[in-house]
Image (cartoon, rainbow, N blue to C red; front, side, top):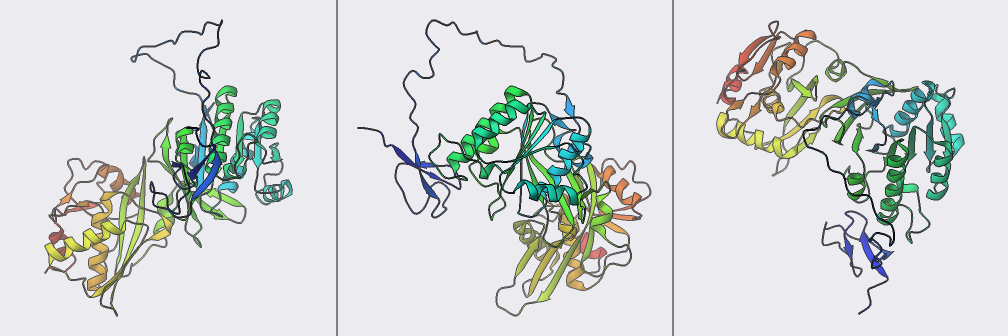
Length: 456
């Protein structure tokens, strides 16, 4: 039986199906299957050419001492921090983010900084005209930088131009707009994105250039297209930011040449993105008396301590089922903290709508934020503010026990630097560097309720 000439590929997950269906059984999405031309493997195509002896595969010892890859600093320290110390030659980076968050602005500023240092930088845009990018460069005061700009979507023309230019850094904005002649599919489909990304990464590996790809994100916040694109590149970075907030967070979720827990913090102003070396001052806002329901969490993002305000509100519900709304934290973890407070402390949230927000647009994934969240919830329920100039951190277990958090000395040092005098935290084995902050040990969640005057 002959193989089909066409297949159907899911545009959400990349799964391949022999016939069309309304729903993809792999990911559960509806109306995502698109017909594409099948490309069968020709028998013998992968065999070595006759009459030509291939070079044998060379192996090395696992204990070998290889030199670390050389880094190319962009001059934007927050961007270099997330990349692991700078860009690595012959590497590919995928940057995703919501529309309008500032991806193009960040990359244009980085391209200008590199070009001013004498590096050959190519900026290829498939979404805008050259005049639009030039206008943005003038607004960012980067028009004087010798960045090589081109507006093109044909992959073959782009590759031919890059081979002639021989750039050190290539920026493509965005990968979803490119199309390859040999692929019978519309631009932006899985087949086109996969083929274009593969060819560009191949060019980067052969030429030694740094490749930076911009990717659109879906409504769920994931980079559009199949996960195979993320597997092709060396680093995947997300640029995050809440609408209406000036703060932007650059976060790596994959990095073959550096850590994945570092973040870069920027502030969007009229003339572009400005680095924020001390993000705690931004996320905390104005100092002074805080209202009830506000607690300061001493967190750590990578190697950087960050103090951020967590705000909670417990309002009487008007419906039979209380509402739970969360911004910047995990909804399931909020439900767990509420259950622990009700079971272990006798506090009742069943008749109240609970709203929780992390100030400044930062998203927290650290379990050590549990104690600060619990303190904010108790303060909101009792309408009593927490002690002034006090921070909190610690992981809360289902039993109500508060577990120690890592890097406690770093958290206390940052709190002392910003003028905080006390901390609510579990007992730590080491308490170096936080001598200026008085530590009040909290070993069980009921002790926190007693400190805040809400013991059941």
